[in-house]
Amino acid sequence: MESYLKINQLNVANKALEATPVGIVSNFNNENLRTSAKPIVIQADKNPDRGSLLMRIKPGSEEKVIAKINELWKEFYPYKLLEINNVSDLLQKQYEAETKLLQFFSFFSALSLFLAALGVFGLIVQVTEQRVKEIGIRKVLGASVQSIVMLFSKDFLKTIAVAIIIAIPIGWYAMQEWLQDYAHRIEIKWWVFGLAASVVIGIAMLTVGIQSAKKAFINPAKSLKTE
Image 1: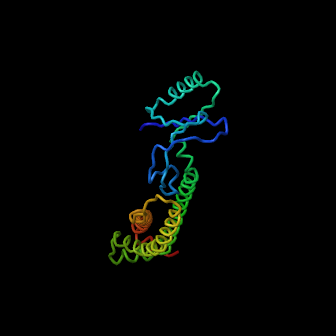
Image 2: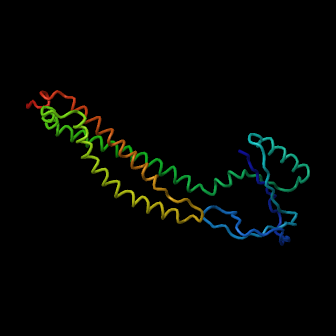
Image 3: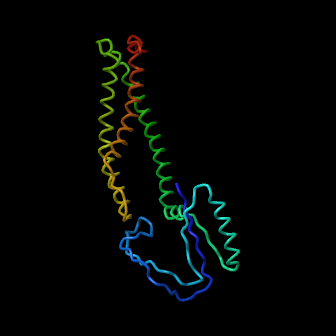
């Protein structure tokens, strides 16, 4: 990927701008994605105390190029200030708030997922412990381990389905409201929520399956024994 450097000659005097339009573009976007593309007039700046240049360079040669530019600048304009910026850095600064928001949501999403999985695990352990005798009776009556696992999975799947039905509209509305601040934005695809729901269901069903299978493999004589 090629790199771009923006080279600016800093203003050292407050003089009237004298420039000639050299181009007009109807939909040029020189701001961030929160603003829509607007018409722009490109001018030929005749002010000797200001100016800028956009330079494309090969990746990995940034330090050598910058050093050479500074060397040539000091040779020809020893008393004028020079500012060099990487275009990617300038673009990144425009979205610092979004980057921090991404980190914030990523951390708390992972934490919420962990706590939710921990809560589901605790709930499943408690339920299977309370119904261990029921599992033993079903095995005595001929129920297979698979059928017992499916029975427990259906019970928890209903609860998870209700939670997903409530959460998806709220998540979609919140994301739509956040994206309204951007003139250039993506549309939220249905598969994003489908993927999230699949991950939640997969984690829950895996936990239910493991715990219920452990109880189902217990000898019925042991699970039915009363103290």
